Image 1 (cartoon, rainbow, N blue to C red):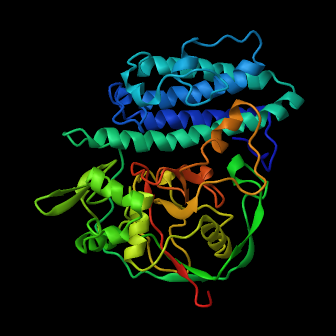
Image 2 (cartoon, helix red, strand yellow; image 1 turned 135 degrees about the vertical axis):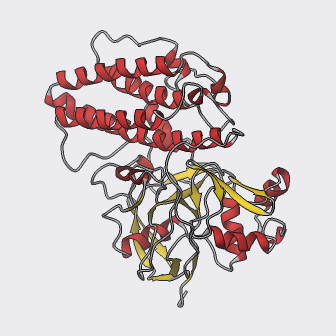
Image 3 (cartoon, rainbow, N blue to C red; image 1 turned 120 degrees about the horizontal axis):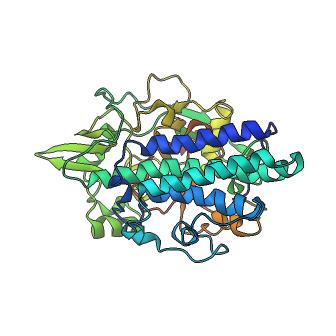
Length: 431
């Protein structure tokens, strides 16, 4: 989980200001939730809200304070065991699938832990000489982006928790007006020898490096994401009953788990409803379909006579479309907490950032020349480069300053609780 340096150097006060901004946003996201809400773990992939709040605090205590605070002593020794996620080099950790059985520390006590570490972090940053601060800044900045990842996961996870409550509670946000899908357009992209990956200016995770060349045939990308209305056509045409549309592992999931629709859809008296963070409503045809797995995305693309883009195609198309340098879209700053309709066609790519993470056809693996960092921090990305697929673009739960064209998200192909959607690709005219 190494990072590149920022474009502009941080001084102590700007680093403290950014620290406070990121940390307070996590607390803002948790504020609508009761202590009981924050304790629930509804399935093994979901972590309790209070665990997310504590784990990102553990990160700063473990990777910053422990190495640089004079006379360091952990806030609570057992917290190192409870809130370690998967860092083998740090030591043992509590089993992920049963995090919800830990009723103590409660949500309030986690807040006390956060406050203690925050005060110590401010004191440390203020006390460092310029040379030491420069060396430590990349780790602290990494902590910011790590916490932003967990802000997104916090919302994805509480969405699942609330979905199981018969009272149908809402978290926040308001539903979009009912709309119909507009016509799907296509953007042609030239192929050739192209460069992808982060250029080393500003922040990046290590899996975005190194920048390298790859060959692409001419291709086309859909100008917007697949909509709920189009997915309803897929369902009506037997999409979840036709084995010939599915990859073998995907068909095993369909039959083994009884998939009939996207993850948060349910049918009541012949009408499809969708659970969202702002409540449960009839499926809105004009909004992007969300919470579908890679298997479902691939099956839909096959049904439509198209395919999913590779991650290199996705990134190169965004660069060629002139949207690599400015992140604009339905991200978490809109506080919609759900995908929105694409808006009017422009002849360019729409919904590049935000709305839904977009499945690609690319397996998650190392770029040529990739080397993980030494030590515990290096465990973050490299160890997961197996049995995962890459997603691009961000979603409605992603902080806007956390999204970028080179960002490589990844999930197992059967994952559905993440806010993921579909953009189609096709071969170009001269391919």
